[in-house]
Image 1 (cartoon, one colour):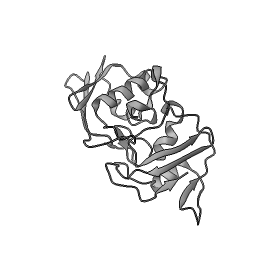
Image 2 (cartoon, one colour):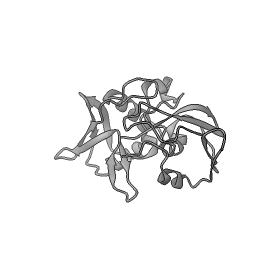
Image 3 (cartoon, one colour):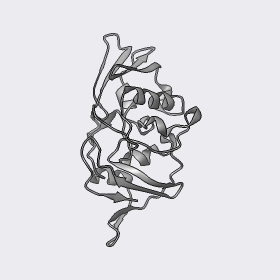
Image 4 (spheres, helix red, strand yellow):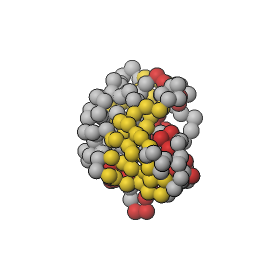
Amino acid sequence: MRPAFLSAAALAALSLPLTAGANDGVLDIVAPFEIKGADPVTSGNIFIKMDLAETLVNVDPDGRLTPGLALSWQASDDGLEWRFELRPDVVFHDGSAFDADAAAHALNVARAKPGLLETAPISAIAADGGDLVVTLTEPFAPLPAFLSEYRSLILAPAAYGPDGEVTEVIGTGPYRVTRLDAPLRLEAQGFADHWDGPPFIDRAS
């Protein structure tokens, strides 16, 4: 489970110098790379480390897979279907509900673009009641790990324009984007309605 604040581990992973202005109450993070846009394919590594959006599966510091937006997952006996039980009562930053339909939409858009999901033997990703079901053409044990990667971030349906273009970063993370000026600046504020509680640091840039 990813903690609902900018953790020391996340900040260390960014390998960035940090400053906190004494008067503005904002944690300032200086990065040696550019924010290329709103699409996780190009800038998802920043979004996931800034806790703006989340994946179905997380990875702990020891490399073990842990629950994220999915509470559990299991493969069928033949290995051709993976079923993910999704976390209930999660909302996106625009107030819309996170559900299996939203997750399927985000992942179907992601697998149509360059990335790990594009290389996986997936034939379908669809909602089945409250669960998300991924159907494969052949058994593929690494699938949950692929779903922890930053290009598999789950964004709200409203984040996407025509043809899968990502127009806004609308995630479920403990921080929501308040300003995104690619390539140099991103501002975020704590999201009080995060499923794991509000973050400890209120604002970051």
